[in-house]
Each structure stands twice: as C-alpha cells, then as structure tokens.
Length: 389
Image (cartoon, rainbow, N blue to C red):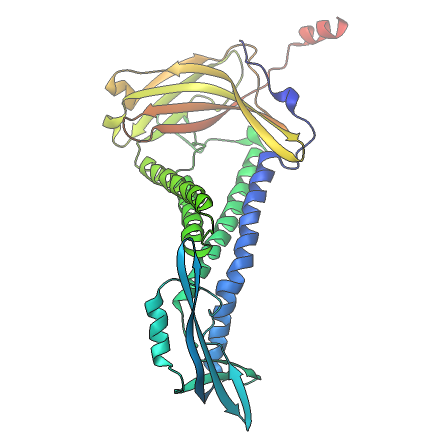
C-alpha cells in the first residue's frame, strides 16, 4: 500500500497539550474576558441593586439635570447626569448617581429625556441612602436596560465554560484511541459505530460566538475607524452565515453505520453496513471510504501549530441507485502494511470511516466514524531473521 509523504518529521518539541492545549487556551481566554467584564457590567450592578432594596429613603433636591453626548463614527451615544442634595442627621450630602449603570453610554435620546422630565432642576424627589455610608445614594434602585450590555460578556463566560468542559472531555477520549468501543449491535450482529461528529455543537458554538461578536461590534465598543468597522462587521456576518449553515445541516438524514469489527488488523476483511434515516430523497450521491489521517504538532517560533494530513483514502462503496443509497452493505480488505492507529504527545495516526452524502443546494452529509487499525506483530521466525540481519 502506498502512502503520501509523512508530516511526522516536522514535529519538534512536545507542544504542551498539542491542539487541545491551544483549544483550551482559546476557551480559557473567553472565560477570563467574560468573567472580567461580566462582573463590573452585570454582576456587581445587580448585587448593588439588590442591596439597595434595604437602603433608607430620604428627601432630596435636584441641583443639576442634563444629558451628556458623545459622537463617534457609529453615531451618538448618551448618558444621563443628575446631581442632587440630601440631608442626613443635620449634614448636607451630594450625589450624582442616578442608578447602577451610570457609566454605560448608549443610544436612544428619548429614554434619557424621559428620565430628565421626571427630575427637572429644583425638583424635590426621593433618594435612597446607604445606611452604612451616607455618601452613597441612588435615585433609581431598580432594573435599567443599560444592564443588558452585561449579557454580552456573560455569553463570553458561558462559551468559555462550555468550551473548556467539551474540549476536556474530547481530550480524554483522544488520549486513549484504542479504548474506543461501539455501543450496540444491530440485528445482523454488526457493531454500530458512534459518529465522531457532534450534531448541534457547532451550531450552538457559532451562534453564541456570532451573538457576542456582533453585539460587541455593533452595540458596545463602537469602532472609531470605518475601515476597521467594515472588517469586524464582515467577520460577524460570516460567522452568522456559518451558524445558519450548521442549523440547516441539523435536518440532514442521519447515517447509521455498522461494522463486523471496530478494531481490525491488516489482511482482515472489513464489512460495512449503512442506513440513512430521514428524508433520503434529497441525497443525490453517497460515498463511503476508509480514511487515514496524520496529525503532527510542532512549534513555529513561539507559537504551536498542528498540521493534519490525509495520507490514505480507500474507497469502499459509491452506490448510484436510490435504494442502494438508502441502505446497503460492502466489504473492504485491509491491505497488508497498513499503518496502525497511534497516538502520542505530538503525533497521531487516526483511521475513520468517512460517509459523504451530496445534497444539492443544501449542506452535505459529512460524518466521521472512528475505527481502529491494529498493529500486527511479525511471526517469531521473521523477528529472528530481522535481528540476525
């Protein structure tokens, strides 16, 4: 059996976790950014809002009332500024805190004007004073729509947590590739393989990412340079399109694959049985093959890179008739000399059954079913002759 050129030789020092180390670092960054921004913009204001429920009500007088504005390339944002005086035990105090989201600038002049209409200059009002610190007071201790901005970093936080949990589980599975076992047997006694594709995960991740990215670009940061805004907005639209594509793929027919052996050695025959569940009328062409991939992790300067290379692609079946696309079976003799499955710190040889279904004007079926190619130990006389030579 002929193989393409290996990429193993380019693997350098151990990469501290390989590609999963990089993935976990990516999600860890999301978690840190989300936690760092969600606390001041969402968690802390809500904590103060809840604490203010027990603050004491005192009369106060509005001494200043206006709306500040800030202009950028994305438009104008506003912030309410109200200053008021109150007296506690004969001492005069002043505060400029309207609510617990005063530091947030946002669009919508009308809502700001409505607040000013309730607190014109010279108006007598009620403020709420912290009994432990008379210098701290607030006019409005309830919910403010500006706090919704804190949901953006909260989504970052959720993505980071979910990503770390998922990548950790996936890393644990990858650490022992030969331990993978099928879950059930079908009526013919074949082992039903579990797809390596997680339907729905990509859609959820891309949707959350698109919400966070577009929320930040369009609603929070407000880029000052038009050219940069177009680039970042374009990335947001592209990710949103990918999320829509993954959503459509959820409605594809579901493939079920059964094999006579999940762990098979060179020289043995692999029997594959397939069945598509769902609307198979849309599937124009089906192809099942045994694919070998090599993954090598190495360093380029200070960064860690992972290359994936398909070195073998053995076609098993390409049915043309509609009924054969819906279900069928085929066999493949595993060639002698086939490289066995292997996993180490920087390198991995991974085999899988690839099922591709072409659907016109729709995302194609693309499922991956892990398979283990076993290592074959040479007979004793061959080992002896090799040692003597």
